[in-house]
Amino acid sequence: MAEQLAVADRLALAKRLWESVVGDAVGADEEDRLVDQAYEAYLANPNAGVSWEEFERQLDAEAGKTS
Image (cartoon, rainbow, N blue to C red):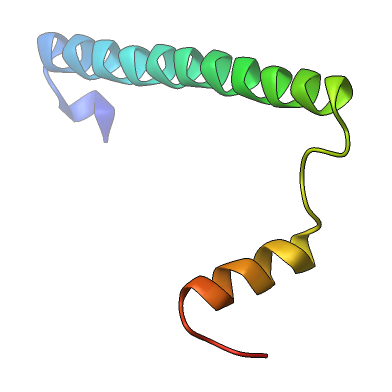
């Protein structure tokens, strides 16, 4: 199918594909940084958070739900 496109169109498509890959890689770096930051915060104070179950109870209470 790509062979049916003119060379200029294939180059433009390749450029757009490459830019989308580079954009994803940049986003992945940011995600890695945020995960590292959250893990470091956890290591510094592991008791600062709540369990998932407690979080759900709090969220339900704020929404006016009861279990």
